[in-house]
Length: 126
Image (cartoon, rainbow, N blue to C red; front, side, top):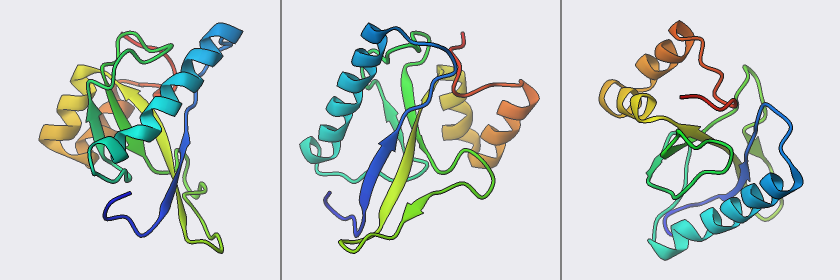
């Protein structure tokens, strides 16, 4: 990726039991997402947001994506590989309200919003 001194690995989590077809939709979505930085001469990194990434499987009410670092305290974020570091990017679908909070008020306000509203970011939501 242009401007990146690292590789990336995308992770997509979903709280539920997707059907085989839904699993295939997620796989296609992630495959298409891997093309994004090369089509737009950009890099993907933690805390970046993607507006209008298309229909996000399993998350019909979410129209934006957040590339999040580890989802748990002390979770794996970086893999030291002989070819270079690999950043783990957790692909998190977010709603318009969540996107607004993050964009306008910042990361801390976003995290407080999630906690105050008991948002499970890997579960579908309205």
